[in-house]
Image (cartoon, rainbow, N blue to C red; front, side, top):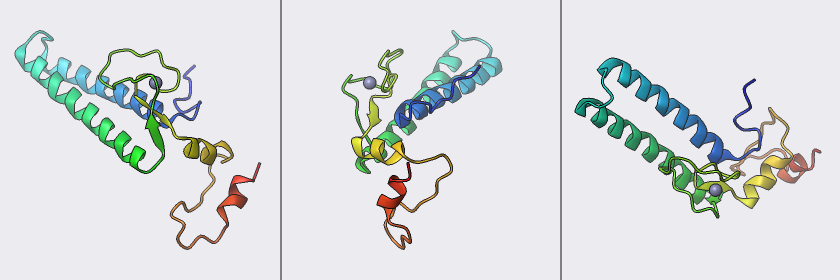
Length: 131
Ligand SMILES: [Zn+2]
């Protein structure tokens, strides 16, 4: 049975885990097309693919950090490390900020609300007190 990728609510961990899976799928397709994992062509393809995926993920984490959603994880992980046992980030290097944790704690799946604060018809504290 597949375990839900966002079960513990850690956003960076979920993004990193899913992006790595997508990257592996792309690498497998490249290997299938190029044929030889030891060839210069495949090694170049692998480097360019991994650089693109890791840069995209890192850029996203940095944007989410600037928005106050993520903070750097205390484990000091870097997304390019092969394996990291940290339960908070699984090597993503980021985990949820306290503010984001509080925000998602009491949000039932499917809840819709406006985070921008503009044209809010419902007071946000009401929504957070639903449970
Ligand atoms: Zn960590």
